Length: 100
Image (tube, rainbow, N blue to C red; front, side):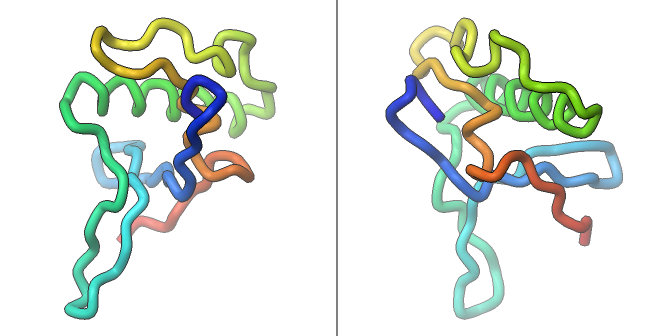
């Protein structure tokens, strides 16, 4: 959730060959490829989102409630909206998709 007014669902945390990564929501095309339907516009925002989402994911896996800083979103990178990576994931919480 961003600033308590915009939600992005279907963000997935995936265990890949190089560790955890965040997969943005996408739609399968007729040709079998996938196209992102929501994604950060620059690397700074991608890193910010990944950090927030993975922090909440790790807390959930460890059985800890999200820290008080997670819902408020903390400090966003300059020029980007403040938001919480934790709520930016699926509304049911971070999910783990099988690696391909």
